[in-house]
Length: 227
Image (cartoon, rainbow, N blue to C red; front, side):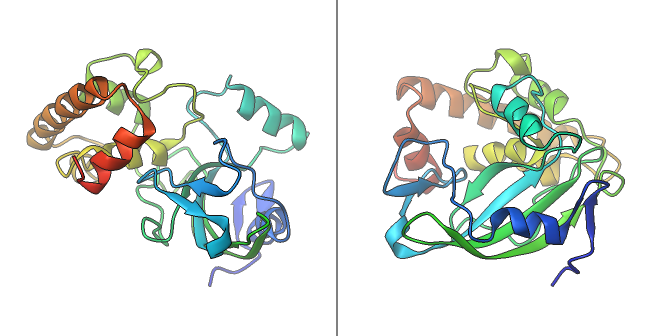
């Protein structure tokens, strides 16, 4: 267990992050009153099952002008906000951060989601400070794989709030050949062979999603291998 005095950034400790979760209501960005949606597989999980849930939290985002990010800043004046950017079901959850990014203070939080959407028994299982991450640029990497400016890529960016792990998760969901953890080396350089494969996987993914009208159901079926 990570010590509660561990600092996530200069403004927040693990203990303070846990306090933001314990006993508070889970706020969903998807309009499903009876279940939450996993941001990796897009499967819906009923609150009545009291699932164990994981979230990815960071104090910096790729699109800082996003209204959700701005509202988080207003909630905690004088402090850098800790914003949850992804929520995973128990099957998709990992106790470690997928691929920590230099320049971002990031954390993994687990909690039990009660039927009334109350969060209980929170636990921080991994923390990566901005100095400890791997030197990779999520926006630039997206552009190298897709050939499209990040802001203009509706399939990836859409209207969501993004951090580095969101980029890792969405490419992992596209296909086995798009694994950023294999593409990006520890010094931040790219493996050219894996990059070429990633580009082909991305083109195949975008064709399928466009044919399916980019629905969440189509994405879920793709990840599960149902189509």
